[in-house]
Image (cartoon, rainbow, N blue to C red; front, top):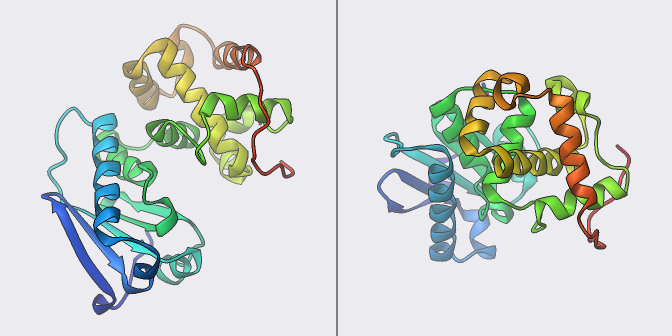
Length: 233
């Protein structure tokens, strides 16, 4: 487990929610409006909570907002735009992603539901925001399919392979797949899949059958040119 350490005097506390504390680092203040940022993070928290929980989360949640990935690396020894620490009820994220519910979803889902397969956790976190880099999930997945940038099912389903994959493609791919499953089988079925990790038991068909149904659904979309990085898988 990583431990976040920083001088307490570097942070400014903002809060307008009884269970949410937002600390803005001094270095981040030049690029953000503090009151607007607080409203943005509060809304992201409420969206994640509505997605995950049938009831309120009684524990206090802390969000630390830092300037950039380099500052994030100083705090948690890893370059990332955001990271959740569910056991500590803590999220650390850079200014540029505070509008998303992604890390707050990870914090809440693990506390309410426990752990699941990596692709399910990431796919549902992305579906919670219902977009990736501002793009519609299905439109982006269809574009990536056209560009031969979707991973095979086996890569998605294996935790090690999923984490080793290029997240530019594996994350929105998982997000679109989860959205498809939610649209066709319902959110309750996704919660069941979270617990069982078993397609046959949850959906009545194999993972391969359902996955290829999703791929076929992308073929029905009108693929538009999307401004999105194309790199090697």
